[in-house]
Length: 79
Image (cartoon, rainbow, N blue to C red; front, side, top):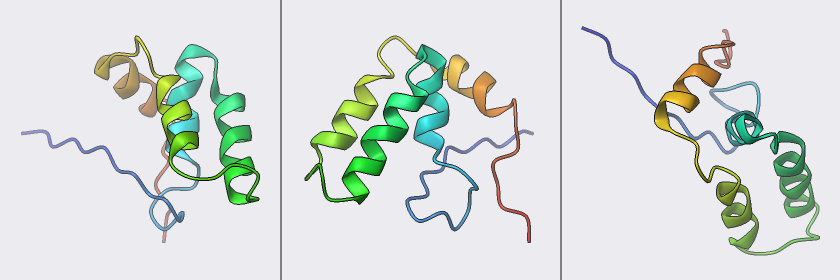
């Protein structure tokens, strides 16, 4: 039996990179997602609109695309 999970880790406790940036890169929008996230953390952008913009980069991305992308590297933090 195989168990799969999709984790969102907002403070970097579990993963070593922003997973949303990684999966946004499927559509070639990883760097733009990262820029939006940095602007949010710097206070340049406010509210959930930034997250919505980043999620919109996933338009047309399938679950299989996401699984394939996440299987390319191990993003979990090793302890």
